[in-house]
Image (cartoon, rainbow, N blue to C red; front, side, top):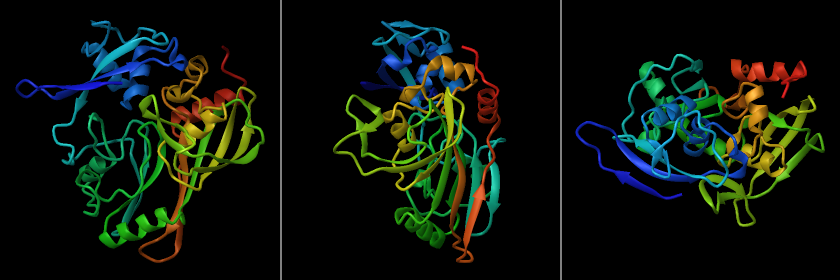
Length: 325
């Protein structure tokens, strides 16, 4: 992938031109879904770039419904925030406030929402949603991610905790670093993992050929994932995952390495036909449970999140023996 930045004209947003080569896993995928996988943008934002003729192949704009072929190279003009440090208050209707107290706030983040602003991301963020709701956060951390002590991928839904006081930020950061936080995820993965309960201990680092992806690498950082199959459907399985470490894309990379990628995760090897049959436009991965020592009381607290509509629909489809491919 290569990139160059185009100069804005007047009040137009700045765009960064990036090139992506389609992997064999993306063969036959709609262009808007592929652009979303490459850039981390939401499916709707990727579709909008296509409609604005900001996605091209061999110098010509390509429609969002175009099916990509392996080894084809596409140029994508990705919008860059004017000021990545500015937190713009936003209204995010699907973001649920689970717990709000003077020390911290626990949110149930929907897919399509980033934890904080970053270059190339123009969609909603957790910190922007909190600002829009009039909820102040701690000033510790980089300006664009103040109060953020851990993150979820844009395409991953579920529970996050954000610090509101400096002392809470310090305590929660330490808890995540020392791995005393309970982080339980549910994932729907392709096939049936063998054994049904196990540990994946495999180092993770940046993919040598794709800077936006990660992979199991001998010289990567230690990464440990514990899992247990909750339900086996044949075509896919519902698994519970406990993270011992918290690397970027850890669950997605580890299950891809086992050849059981998360359903819907086109970036990491999911079957596009199965993903479409389950109605998935993102990875089936949900931060189900989050527990930690409360900075307020010093006692252990735990929160739980129900499956959002898209993930619940996919599981019910599997339970009923679908999809019919």
